[in-house]
Amino acid sequence: MVDLIGVAAVFTVMIALLRLKWHVGYVLIAASAMLFAIYRMGPSAIAATLYSAVVSEELLDLTVALTFIRMLEMILRERNVLNTMTEAVKGVLRNKKCVLVSMPLLIGMLPSIGGAYFSCPMVDNSAKGLNLTQEDKAFTNYWYRHPWEAMLPLYPGLILATLITHIGMRQMVLLNLSYSAAMLPIGLLFCMKGIRGAFPYVEGRRYSALLSFTPFVILLVLVIVFGVRLHYALVAMVFMLMVYFRYSLKEVGKVLVYGFNKEVILLIAGVILFMSTLSHCGAVVNINSYFISRHIPLMPILVILPFVTGLLTGFTVAFVGSAFPLFMSLPGLDAHSFSLAFAAGYAGVLLSPVHVCLILTRDYFKADMWGLYKKIIPAVLLYFIAPVLEYVIFRRFY
Image 1 (cartoon, rainbow, N blue to C red):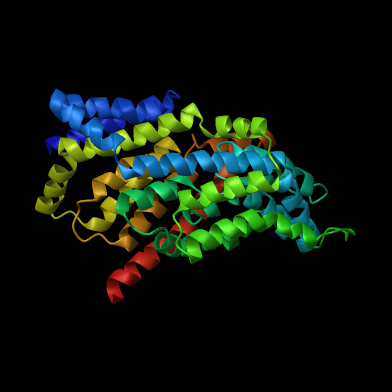
Image 2 (image 1 turned 90 degrees about the horizontal axis):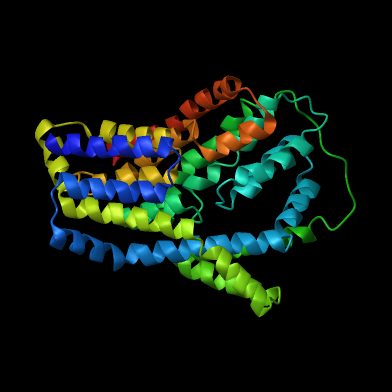
């Protein structure tokens, strides 16, 4: 019980600091310091914890992956590849609903904080003359940016989940696929009502422009089909694009500087340190023993903790980095359990009033927040049915 109170106090402080707009990296470092104090860890124990964090494989993998994701985003943006992709989709699909949905879906393939703001003008421009409310447009931009985060191996939350749980990326993606895919038809129930027809036909290189998707296709094939580790695939892709676009040494340097962003490094350091501290202070083992002795059902634990963390922080990395290490020594967990926990945490993130994408989207469209929530809340409830059914069916029949 003491361990539960201590960890609850740490989470409370984390939530308070995040509400005060502290960087997630600083919050996790502060949380680690609290655990040092609560568990009276001496200099040798703290040194062992720090050493474990520095030499961990997760630190290297996560640093390389997030750094090169930023580099990839910069190259595609500066070389106008993203704009070409957008025009290709508009020229090929033409259907108004499909085009509107494709804009945030397209930009959502890149895990960029604040990227939702980039797709806002695309949605707004495509929606001209379609008689949509500001809330309709805001919901479309917000909702359809987010199906990727649980299934696309470019997102740091998904990467971190696989590193913590040691579940293969391919397996985690396949498990999360059902509820990610469910978001596509669910969104149509709450926006674009009465929208029909197609955009005018425009002559041009519509299909050849689809070649702009090649970097994403290659990356996904390498990771999903051939099982190449993400950071290796990203490094190869970034340098291939640099060669293809004939980057000068000055341009290469600019991309490298952009990739090695201090805030990203801080975030990674905080996550790895917090994970290492939870492991070394004994909280996980003690809480595990408490749950076993109290016979608390597994499913409520898997749902409530990540959901609340996601709701209060608005960050996928935050609920994965905070909740998943606590689950690691619980008995009876399998890949389906972690998929359910990820879905629950992500439901909290989607509903979070401090979610950056929600804040930026609502600000751009000047949408009424409650009017927007009247669409988001039922959409999230419907979305969560898929992972719960998947978990229950697996537990019942397998």
